[in-house]
Structure formats: C-alpha cells, structure tokens
Image (cartoon, rainbow over all chains, first blue to last red; front, top):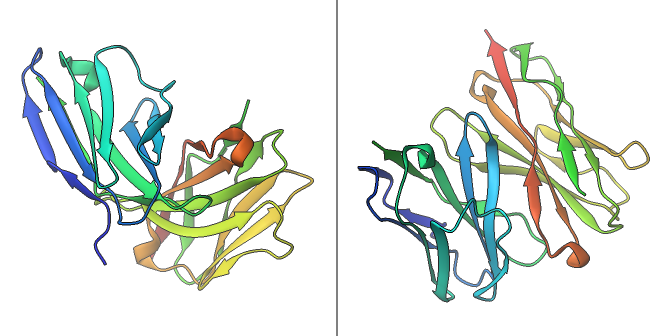
Length: 112
Length: 116
C-alpha cells in the first residue's frame, strides 16, 4: 500500500519566491496534518484537516502561510513570500479518526 | 492546555540491554491517545506504539512496550534488547479526544545512542 506521498523531497529557492508543498494522503484517511520541524522549535503542528475541512490552523506562523485541501486525495501548503526563517523540514501526515498518524518522508525546504 | 514533556535530551544504552525513554503529559481531556515515533537519521517518522487512555493493559509491539501510568500521567517507552539500528530520535506524542479535535502535539524528543 502506498503511504503518504510528499513532493518535492527537496526545495531550494530564493527569498521572496512562492513555495508550494504537496501531499497525497493515504487513501481513506479522513485526517490530514501539516507539521514543520526545525532544530530550534522541534516538531510543530501547523494545520490539520478533517474530511477536507480545516479544523485548526492556530499553528500557522503568519499570513504568508496558507494550506488547502481541495479533495480527499490532495493538499497543498503554500508560503508566499518565502523567507530564510521558513527553512525547515515540512511533514504531511494522515490518519483515520483516533488512529496513529502516518507521516510522509517530508520536504526539506531551504530559503536562501 | 495540553503538554508533552520528554526530559532526556540524550540517552546511551549498551547493545542488547533494555532502555526506558521518559514521557509525561498533561491534559484535562479524559479521552486521549499516546504515541511514540522513531526518527532515524534519514529523517522519516516511524510510528512505533499506541496507548489509549482507556486501555487497561500496557501496549506492546515486539521489542517496544509502553509503561502507562495514568495517575502519574506518564507513558514511558521501553525498548528491550537494544540494537544498533535503534539509534535514533524518539518522540512522544499525545492526541486529545473528540473534545480536543484530535489535535496532536509532540514532545521535544530524546536522542538514543546504542553502543556496540
């Protein structure tokens, strides 16, 4: 069975550019989560969806960040404009209600 | 507010010995779940074990067991017969129940080093 698929695996871009991270959850999972991991702040929950609807976006750092889930099999996390402090590994995870989350391999983002 | 605390930034264990990684939590929700994840140096997050707040018995998965002490709000991970491949970062996480919207937070992690 395919796990959570994230793309790209690595992204290097210049400050000010728009960045779009993509995630395909495990088929049938009704929860989708976006996390950011840095050395300084650890693993932070940014936003999560239930049945494609955003439930809690209190972890989104600022208005430059936005996330969408247009259907059950696709979600995006967008940063516009990007800044060097956004450099991190971004994970997407999905789960069934009450079950463990399954993580994608992450996107390593570097903003120069 | 919910909170997860892992007080051991790093741990060393001799190969083939058992090791306990500490995790305490704080929540007012009576329904919650506790998880442990492993993150090797390659970066992926690997689910290890789960304990529900209403589960009567401690969870076990192969060499992993969760020492769940509800009154003390602790959920320590025990790894038996450590292997070199167990060297990794380990995260404890808690998810509150429906009243908490299934939001999950992670502890700061413990880095485990297994010595040959």
